[in-house]
Each structure stands twice: as structure tokens, then as C-alpha cells.
Image (cartoon, rainbow, N blue to C red; front, side):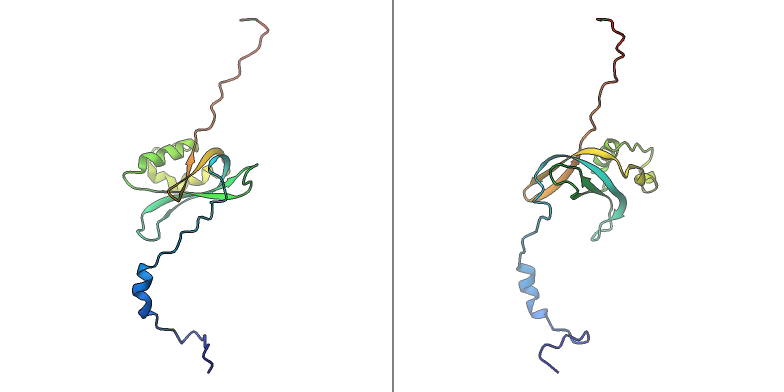
Length: 151
């Protein structure tokens, strides 16, 4: 047997490092730091209702595909954990996506309706944390009929 035995039935005892591990800090890598903060147009590539891994709280996760010219074809995530304090923000997010619900319980069955939607977003980084905000789509006034009259 070599000193580098990596068979699955031999595991090193790492308990001696537990205290140092708890005190150690590793820098959080921001996978999106190369995408500049600012406004973008994005397509909702995927939207789903799921749960947080640690607490099991419900959340909505969007996968947003950026349109050019800056960071074209890159994707950004948007996550909204659902709590009593965030329901109003979620309702606004969904309204910006054009999804108006009578009851939040309809969301799991209807969230797919917003996939493929192009909408304005803004990426902002503050204190090392990246956030994505939906913006209201431009509301253009209806076209005025041109009948040739000066007024």
C-alpha cells in the first residue's frame, strides 16, 4: 500500500482542523464582477419556484440572459426569498414581468408564462454583494393618427 492511498474506504481524520476551519475566512468570489454595474436588457431564460437549501423557505429564481452589446449572452441570476416582508417586492417584480396574480399560490403553475420575456434590468453591486433589479418596461404613448391637420 502506498502512502498516497486514495481508496474510498480510507478517510483521513480531519477533526484536528475543525477549530481552524471555523475561524478561517475565504474571499467570496463574485462570478459576475466582470459584468459592469448598470442597465441592461435581458431575456428571462428560466423562472422557477423552489426552496432555499438551508432553511427551506420558498423562493423565486430567475435566470436572465443579457442582450448586447456589453456582456452579451452572459447570464445573471435574480433570487427573491419569499417572506412576509418580501411579498410586496415579489408582487412588484412579477408585475414588472407582466404577471398579475389573484393569489400567490398560483405562481408555481404560472411562472413559466414569463419565460422568454425581454425586459429592462439593472445590475448593482454594493458592499461586495450583487443584486439585480427589474425595471418597468418603457411605456410608450399610443401612436397619434396623422390626418394632415395642423392641430
